[in-house]
Image (tube, rainbow, N blue to C red; front, side):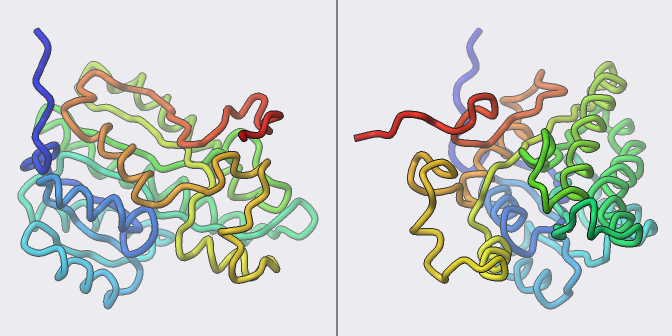
Length: 268
C-alpha cells in the first residue's frame, strides 16, 4: 500500500541528529531544515560563539557542542554530548571538512595528515562512537557529505579529493557491513555550491567580488550554482522514513553528468 506523503514540518519528527560543521554553509542549512522538520539537532562547530548563537536561534529542539575534529578524542565526545542532551541519537550527518589548496609538488605530509584527520578519520570515529547507540535502538542513519571531487578532483585539490574518495569507500563498506542491523549509510557528493567559505576561497583565487553572477557556461550550464538550502533538501531525504530501504547510495548533487561533464549545447 502506498504511504501518504508526510506533512511539512514532520519529515524528521522526534528524530535526534548530530550535524557536524553546522555553523555555516551546507551544514548550517541542513541543521536549520532538520529543526523545521521536527528533529532535535546537535549543532557542532569549532567556535563556541557561532554554535551557541545558531542553537539559541533555532530554539529548544537545538543544542550545541564544540570541538576540533582533527583531535581524535572529539568525535566520541560529540556523540556522548548528543545522547546526554537528547537521550538518544538516530542520525549522524558528517558534514565538517577542511579544504586546502595543495598539489603533488606543494603539499606536505603535515597538511595531508590534517586533511585526512578531519575529512576521513573523524567521520569514521564518529560512526564508531555512534554504533553502540544505533544498535541499542535497533538502527540508525548516517549521511556523509562528500564531493564530486571524489572522482578525480582538481589539480590543486589533491589532498581534499583523496579524502573524499576515501569517504565513498567508507560509506559503501559500512553500508554493506551493517545493512542487516538496520544501520544505513549514504552519501551526497556535492557539486559547486555557493557557501560563504566558497565565496571567500574564490576571491583568494583571484575572482572578482561579483563572480557568482559571471560563471562560465561549462561550470554552470543552468547559469548559477547550488545553494546550501538546495543541498539540505537532498540531505533530508536520507534521514527521513521516506528512505527506509535506501543504503549504500552515493548521490551526485550536481547539475550535469560527470561523464560528458561539459555540455555542448547551450539553451536559447
